[in-house]
Length: 85
Image: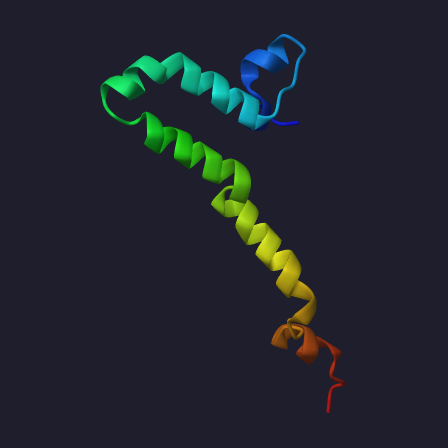
C-alpha cells in the first residue's frame, strides 16, 4: 500500500492504517485551530464525503470501468483491421 494512502508514520513503524483513520488523527491534532477559525465542521464534512465517495481520481476510474465495455472500438483499431485494397 502506498504511503499516501496509509500514512508515512505508520509505514515506518510497520503499521498500515486506512486513510480514514489517518484523517481522524489529523483532525484531532489540528482541532483547536479548526475550532478557533470556525472550520471544524467544514473539514470534518469534507473528510466524511471523501471517505464515502472517494476522491476525483477514484470516481473517474470507477466511471471508466463502468463505461468501458459499452464503448465502440476506436477508429484506429478498426482501420488497422481492415484489409488493404
